[in-house]
Image: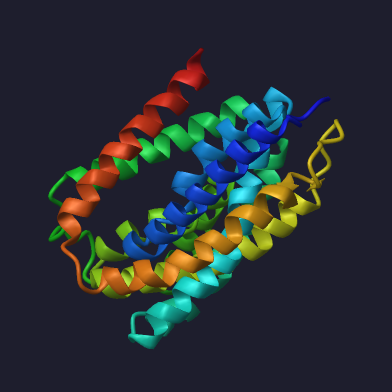
Length: 275
């Protein structure tokens, strides 16, 4: 199994990963949807370019993306917390379910085929894109964010699907909180912390996974530490900046632009699923 080795290809690969990390960190802090929604499709392409075995590229992309969420979520959460943007009561209510779901999701993903992973990613990305395009800012499905058993079941579902996709919980927890009465800025900040809660157990699950081939490039389980070393510092740099912008910019236009990007990503993943 030969990875790219010529200097130009390596430089292009590093530049692609570094740029993606910068963008992912900015989006993680700004929209609260998790930088993984950007990282996974680009990382999957980069791994193919680097020469990873095709059937495992999606697994490594998802696992490595989830690992990068740990430092990114720490940086983003600190920035949001300084502005009072984290609802710690909801964090305490949802934490058990989010942690459990993050671990279970990684275990299930490690056993799934790449077709299943691309299908899950494409379907959820399409739903998130629709949410961003539709005028649902004032829609409420419940008067307040659920707590207790209902809240933990919802959190476990969010954590499980997010872990299988390699994304922060914000992609699903922000809509869940805003549709049940949570204010948007508080939802974004709280979601950043949820990303940390699900990424830690999820990453542990991916590190302990045992693929039936030896994967190259300093890969442990399904986590590529080579890619992680490039992406994580970049995303940590821009996550606090995105968090600051989140409290001052018009979100509707940004949501539509990001929704258009997600439509492209979802279409690509779904085409791969059904090819």
